[in-house]
Image 1: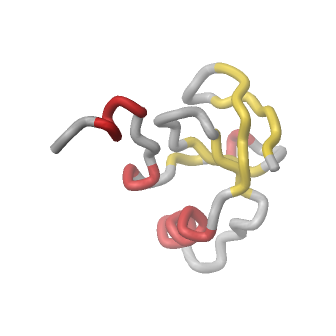
Image 2 (image 1 turned 135 degrees about the horizontal axis):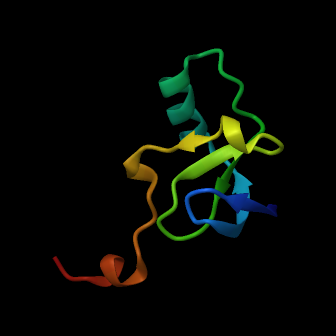
Length: 79
């Protein structure tokens, strides 16, 4: 399930999806074990790490770098 929201890092409307379990764990690690993570949504734009509650963009944040989705050409590059 996705929803269209304004993303402050992309500076445009983007599709957002709910955080997965690993992303929720990372937010809890940063904000504390009692932080409510069940209403957090993540921007689905390539390379974007922004997340926010459904109705409160100002309460959002940036996920750790390990959650950044690589661009297609970077993922296909030989090592």
